[in-house]
Length: 354
Ligand code: 1CP
Image 1 (cartoon, protein in one colour):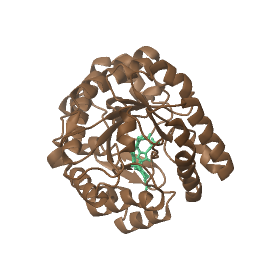
Image 2 (image 1 turned 180 degrees about the horizontal axis):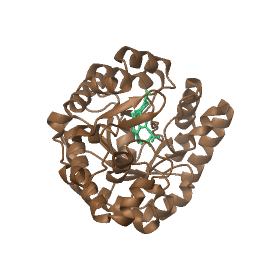
Image 3 (image 1 turned 135 degrees about the horizontal axis):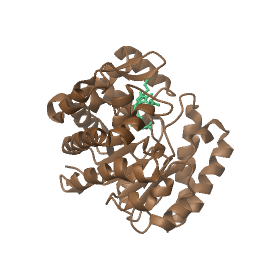
Image 4 (image 1 turned 90 degrees about the vertical axis):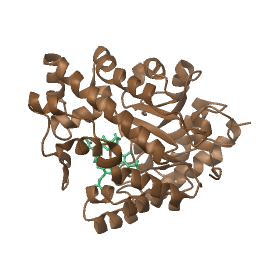
């Protein structure tokens, strides 16, 4: 195995010295790129794109061909796991993800089983190994999964939701049922992420997009507890290299100390937190990833540069920061503005790394 040409991202996650602050962007491959829309049209629809390793490899590499990003992220979706559990994922035009068989009956919940990633999610493992070959060690590849709670939100609601009424009703009325789903999900996610690592993912990230809708007590009991179990079960090394992990709870700013205490290597921050204060709270324990408001990318390049400078300045000198957005890139983001962002991070961050 030849060495990575750019290991800045992996070093920053482990708080080792780097020459500059690495940057990648959540949803860096997606609908804001015209070439993505073309490949998706060739695939037919989004799910067929995810299930075709050749095309998934193609779209993973698209943002890297345009911008000097410091990491690639597997092109897939968090909802492939419940799909592999038999819930029947589909995407209806303009309406986002939906499940044909959401978890509505107790027997269906009791029947839920952990899918074998090597068979039921073979197409993801094939995409991971194919992307690694195509990357040729230029930058590391990030694998990912949803958190048990975030997956449960979609599995119970049957799709996106404004208020998570059904999940919350179950949480308060039938907590043992929700715990059962979360237990299966946690075992599924652990096996899935470890399989991605064995297929070649060099870091992994857990997306807890909806943990932030919970109360303080419910967050710890129903989301973080299961994330902690996953972190404890993750492989930390593969092929002689460390495999760092990142935990991101959107809206999790109040809980940074608890998140850092899960044993993860890095904590993702949304844009509501001051990264300097976050570093004071947990920076001795974990690296931080974030946290530019994705809406900044609608402003002019000079404004983007100012906002990038502000975050770099607030984090301050030393390693342990991976620059990113506080959530995914919005669909109508101008690609030129993404160039301005990546350039600003690389140009302005050198002075913080003596
Ligand atoms: O129409 C299209 O082409 C589909 C749009 C799209 C894309 C580009 C979806 C549907 N998923 C993705 C890719 C995706 N999803 C990636 C790819 C890697 C990258 O470039 O970052 C990743 C990491 C995800 C993860 C994901 N999917 C999350 C967690 C992160 C987040 O954004 O909060 C969630 C919640 C999903 C569910 C999902 N899949 C797709 C959509 C539109 C959604 C969100 C639905 C909702 O708002 O509830």
